[in-house]
Length: 628
Image (cartoon, rainbow, N blue to C red):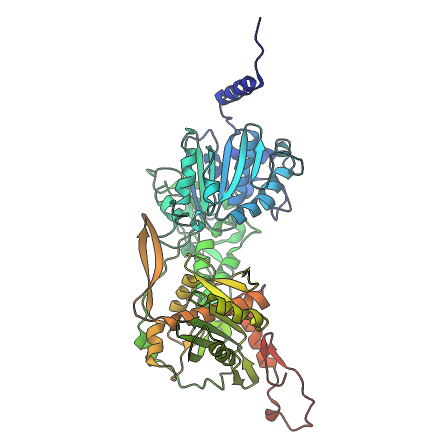
């Protein structure tokens, strides 16, 4: 008599037999060309996937295929060149052809949820062979949630690099570490999140680990370190004139401009024959392109790609050059850093240079600060709290972020008592005479990092309608100067400020020697001590637990002037976010400058006519004039 097998035994035997099966010989690119469908919700080109649209992705995806012997693949890249869809193809392939446990890590848990909803869910929904294997999320106990998607023979999990719990659990065979340069260096004192996640693949001999990322700062970039250890492959394309193969580099881009305005077509100069290649040839060039390793003895496959390879219809050479000329014109170091990272796919080397205070002190100008320059179209203020005083710096802004220090004020008193806060309120209500009327401070950023956080909250909350906001500095590398605020339990808005980013920007501008975009004007009323404080820090690179970390350190005793200028820059960014969210800072200042220019001068400067009734006039939103 044959004993009946239990359900557990049947399940074990079935899993054992599936484990003995060879992985399919079909590559990920072949699978994607046959099955993958793109949704209009997840991309700009819905319909059937075609690897020929982004031919450079073929070899990258095929290295992730089970039939390829490598276990690790690195992709140092520009933004928006198809890498995310390459990961989605890999996920789809695993679900359909080679099931197993798969972990996808995003920089944050919130971003992981967004990617799951906007990218992965739509990819599964639109591709029939995937839709059949992953139950609809609306069904009870379907195994399909926002961060966990079960399928026969495997499971897809998503988490953030900021979640220690999400990086520690079951073993995984497939690991996608997306945008690793945005990961924290040390996760809750447990170490590098990349290493934590990689340990989960140790039990799988046929594991695959993929690290695609846009680079950030030189010397700190994870993806740069990974690429340096790889075989360093560059995508070489043929010249349509001579057939010579070459990797596209920024040095080959050819264009003409006048005063930073593009005046010619953008072409590429062949480094073999010197002929100018028009961008219309790009599709044919990409189709015949091939990856060539510059470090054949590298440990694993590594790929580098810039936005110069972006297919026709995506980012053009013309747009790339236009963005280049914009940061050149405005001398905006943040725009230059972003362009270098997201367009060239290269690391940005921050200078971290010290600025001598004597040079700034000696270039002071004799300009009035009560009757302000006609170029100024916006005023912001940064406020710093100390144990025995409150200090503030008032900055006037003109086109292209040219700035003027209008006021530097110290208020002494007991911050636990209301009198000093009343004095601060009067200082922030000060008016500044302008040839077109009277300007007031449009936005104020007050630091909460001292010993009087609650007092700052109590001051800013009833004044948020005047755009007086609480801020908290953060030294996380690459953090934007400001972004969306969080709402505290007290109901106050709190803006997190990327102080390192702001200091990089400011020190770059302090090095600008001629009036114009980005230049900082200092009044002769400013004391020598102000300039010593303004230049009291420098950027250095330190190592923490074996990982490089760039940080700003003091070179002097006091740095309040530097902090306040940073907060005034933050206030400029906050004002743009709150009032002109669809514009860049320069676009906003340009529009405000035009509005100021169009504003009628005060009545005394106009031809004599009957006095009109008292009326309201706006230089621009947030800037009121006495005659309003």
